[in-house]
Picture 1: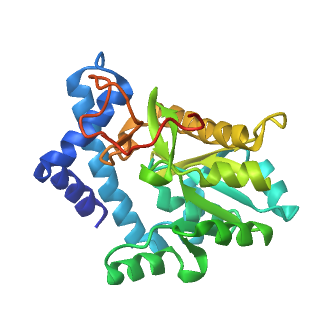
Picture 2 (picture 1 turned 45 degrees about the vertical axis):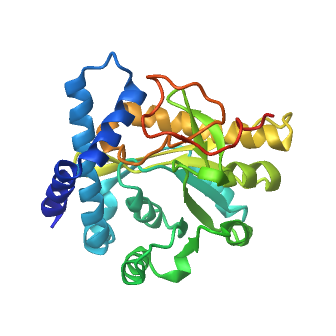
Length: 290
């Protein structure tokens, strides 16, 4: 099934020229026009196969990632001792990740360390598919629905829980702009806001494919105390995207380039070849400014 769905991802790349064009455009924006066109195209195609593999690993997650023997597939580095300390002190924590490697595997990476994760998720349009995916993730008790998620996240972290949030999606009218590969990207402000205004411990993490297993880096993000709440929110969002950008540069074939990450553009932005062809102004100004 793993190979089948990876192949299905490659087939999707072939049969969806518009989505493939978006992926190749995103790779161009991130890596620059100086990078060889053949390399950019190869990275875009590989990202579709990775999406298929993520789907397969989600469907087979209990067997592939949930057994005791599967714990050896995860290698941890970074600030895990700081996360352990936050959870032991009852502070809870918010881990922001992106569509890199296998974000669904992050749940099992934490479970194998004895950490129960609640994930902020978007409700899928198809109720049957949403129910299946929710069950594979562990049931309603371990998910927090994205719309109106702030209260659920605060309740969870105040109980000392760990909450996961995907922070690299285009936010449209709900977002603020932060630099991502040197280009303004409209981003959900919630993780930065919770860190800045309520002192929620904030981490950046992901589950990167490494051989037959996963490398799971973790970085604690601590905004300087001299900043105002608005400045701390901005700092936290920019810090997360900077960390994520560094991981993507090391593993570009594992990122979901098919998402229109730079779709929402600042009001009055000057068009140019360094901007996405699919970009649309939403009618809002630059973040944290007039």
